[in-house]
Every structure is written in structure tokens, then in C-alpha cells.
Amino acid sequence: MQPLAAPAPTRPITTLVLDFLAYLEFERGLSRNTLEAYRSDLQQYDVFLDERGVDVLAATGEDVSAFLNGLAAGSTGRDGTVKRPAAAATVQRKAACLRSFYRHVRREGLLEADPTADVRGPRKREQLPKVLTRAEVAKLLAMPGRHGDADPITLRDRAILELMYACGLRASEATGLDVADVDLEDGMLRARGKGRKERLVPVGRRAVEAVSLYLRESRATMIGTKHAEPALFVNARGGRLSRQGLYKIVQRHARSAGLDDRMSPHTLRHSFATHLLAGGCDLRTLQEMLGHADIATTQMYTHLSAQRLQDVYRDAHPRALHAATV
Image (tube, rainbow, N blue to C red; front, side, top):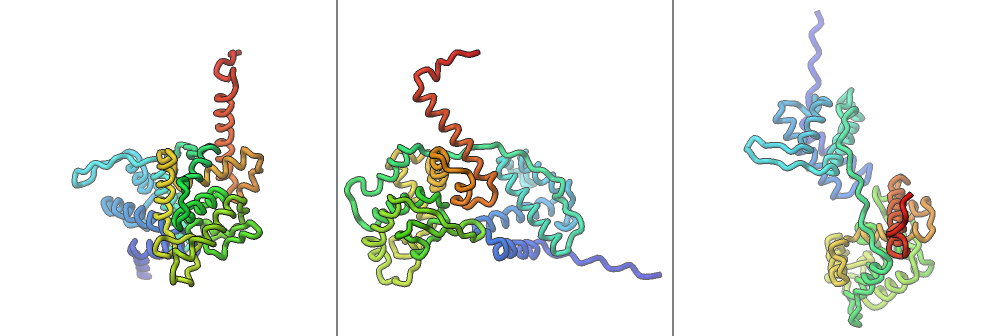
């Protein structure tokens, strides 16, 4: 009688997670923030499985569903602490993390069946992003230097706001720009988006003027002796501006414009897209400028444009609020 083959040794989830995160970073080019979120999600999943006495490679679809449903419903921990229900968007993200994790584990030949294959997270409620009107954008962009200031910080802030709105840049794309990425003579910019994908975006005249002035009269003063610094936008110490620093800049000027309750760096990107569509830009061209991999993502802005048209109509038409019903 042949002896039974020894079962394949299990691998600690820590090793599996490290392998998975390395794959996401080096093969997929995901951002540091996304990697940290996935790490946290998988650690939470590991704690859940440990409480059930289940190994990560032995988990079933039922285990995964129980984890996600527990997040959506809220739960009471062993120590008696009550965990509030997670938002649908949070549960969706954790579900996407687990699907991606188990697909990777299967590619590595450690699993035959994917426990997430038939698992569905809660539907994410569609929520349109906040968008500024053209007048609100003009008010925001006028904030840096509104008192006649022309110091290096003011010129930098004006250049940042003008360029982000002119090109629809993400915060990470704006802070990741090098001087060599901007061709002011031809009015073009090279942006590096998600997954390090590059795209070319036109730069409008106002943004060209603002960036030119910043480069000519501000940046050299700010970098001082750091002549090798490649970053386009730098902080007060002469190093590359961080995303946190960019957020503070946008919030500071948004408060001055009375827009802080509706404003983040991404609001300028949403406004850029909505205003282009309203001005007649076609969806495919907008997709290219935004760097969306899937045009379905870009189509969100068609809803925003339609909503904006309705708002303008209701505000402007003398009989819009009193139309007869049929």
C-alpha cells in the first residue's frame, strides 16, 4: 500500500501578503497609499479568519461573504467593542482587495478554486463628485496674489492652481511633475498617472503664463542651492512638494474664496472635465486627457454636465419653475 502523500505546507499569510504587495507595486505600479490600504484590509481579514479557525488558503466563499457582510452590518468584537457598519464604498474596496489577492494566489499555483469567484459586495451608491462653476473656479484662481502679492510662495500657488485646472491633474500627478515634463513653448505637459502610465495634455494660455512667471521669478529662489532638484513644484525648503502640502495649499485658497466646504485638489479635476464636456469636448478626447483606462469612468461626467445644464436652465429660464404639467 502506497503511503499517503504529505499535504502541501501552508504558507503564513504574512508571506503571501508581502508577495502580493510586491506584485502590485512592481508589476502593477500601484501607489503607496493603495498598497497600505490593501495591507490593512488583508490584516483585518486575517484576524477574522483566525477567530474562525480558518487558514487563508482554506477559506471558502462562505468565509469571505461572512467577512464582508459583517463589515457592512457592524459587529461586536470579543472584547465587547462595537464596530459601526462600514460604508458600502469601503466594503467594495475590501472585496476588490480580496479578489485581487486570491487571483494572485491562484496564479502562484497555491489554490485551485477562487473563494471570491461568486462573492458580491454591497452595491456602491452612485455619488456624483462636487464640481465648481466657472465663476467659482475664477474666484479660486484669483486668490493667490489678490492683494497684489508677488512673493515666491504666491507665484507658486497661482501656478499650481492654474495648471491643475488647465490639465485636469490628480494631486499625485501635479506633485510628481518635473520641470522637464512641461513644454511651455508648445503648451504641452507630460503627466504620469495610475500605473505610471504617461499621457500628453494641452496646457492653456493662462496656465502657461502662470507657470512661466513661477519658473522665471520664484522657483530658483525657493530651491536655493538645490540646483539638481528636478521637481516643478517645490516647498519652502526647496524640495519636491508633497501631496499633503498640495492639499493644504488648495484648502487655504479655497477658504479664502469661501469654497472650503466643497473643495479638494480633485475638485479641480472634476471641474476641468465637466467644463470641457459642457463646452463641446467629445468623450474619447476627454478620456485621453484624464488618463482613464476605461471610458465608463469618463462617462460619469456626462451625468454631471447634464445636471449642470438643468441647474442653469432652472436658474435662468423665466418659466422653468412654473411649467405646466401634462
